[in-house]
Length: 129
Image (cartoon, rainbow, N blue to C red; front, side, top):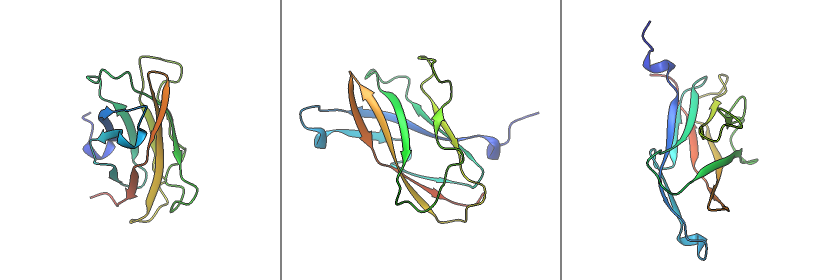
């Protein structure tokens, strides 16, 4: 049986980054969604690091902001294969009881070369087309 598009996870890819440890305000991260994703209730979300990046970037945690709209993820984001250094992907499921339009602020924490950095994208709940 073929996989339907609606059954596939919404993939957020860290495509590139430039880190300046001396001037963190000059650092940047590029996500494939520009830092704002649109997802449907009940849909899986997967965060992946572009395998062609040579920075050694590793996602260490994904945390939800306390002042956000609602608990968008149920359960919260977690590593797909904890303890497996070759699988750096993270995954969560959008709470199926949410209404369209809610926006969640969250933070991706990651390490490069022993230093920890963060990036603050958003995720918005939309109904399935």
